Image (tube, rainbow, N blue to C red; front, side, top):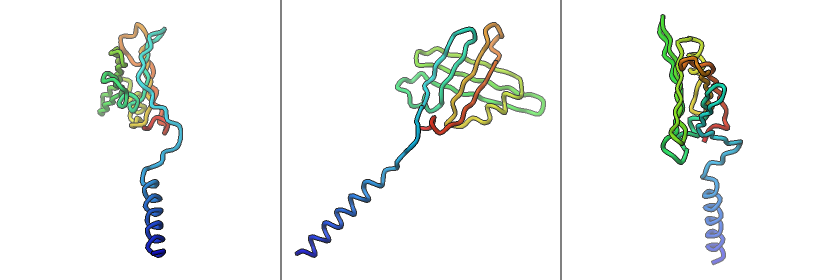
Length: 134
């Protein structure tokens, strides 16, 4: 009887230990930034793809695309905030393509359209950081 009770308690303890360790533990800062569009001296959008994807609304999105060909390059960025406001910019400047190609799913994206420049991207900032992961 004692042996059976000891075995049952041992198995129960082992089962509880295995159960508590099966879920992954995540550490580190987490900051999935939702999309914001700011209208100021220059208009800009910022946010993370993870923040937009896991937001509570169905409006948010942010991202950039780069096309490079031997004699032609085009880069564009677009964002929509939770209120449905959108901002886009584009540029044929080939140096923006290399910036955008560094983008990952954990990127923070910030792009600026200076007023009166016809939608040309003034800046594109891509920040890769583990805190933007979910």
